[in-house]
Length: 238
Image (cartoon, rainbow, N blue to C red; front, side):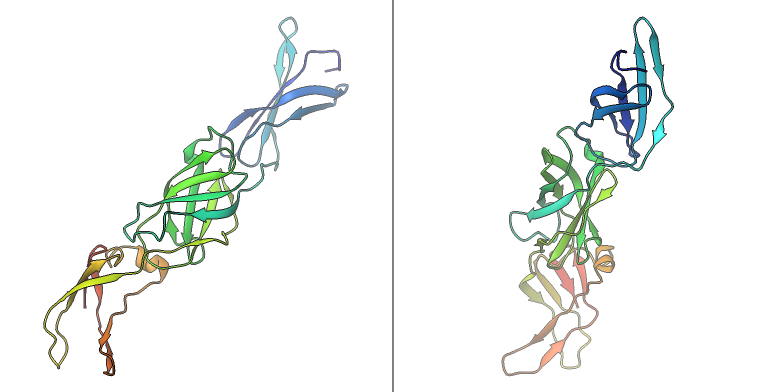
């Protein structure tokens, strides 16, 4: 391959299966060196393949060359939502930042987790909404506050965000059940944003628990026992 032959074609495939074709390829040193320009993309561990020749001479293609070359990892600079998140999940959260990938990148290459350390809960439906700079995800059912976010783009993991999201605090609107002085009677609290069923995995993932206390101003304060969410987000029994 010399500088007088037709321009070579260079493709590269990421470890995650994305295939890209470099642009502006040219021979810069006879027989030994080609320079190309990468295209916008995502992924890691590029495998390069070069094709040379033309219609008259026929096209010859090299074996793949595995490398550790990769696109820049995503970086989160903002986390926004319409407010505190419903404990039922299903809320849209927008992650802003850089190196999120070009428009048209498959949604399957995006995922996000969040929680006290950024790994406890998994968001769903993550997809790129603005070229390189914004991804939207849907929150999971959960509880708690000041959760940081971590974004994965085609196998590359961001650092935890400095911005956080929080679930809406619980609100008690009703109480039923008699309370004898001997204790051990069941009391049911009704309300909103109590969190998922106690049998669900989110509580263990978050190392979270339910604490219910009661008492009056100037009176003793008691802590109920055996509290569990028996109707997701709406009812607790103690």
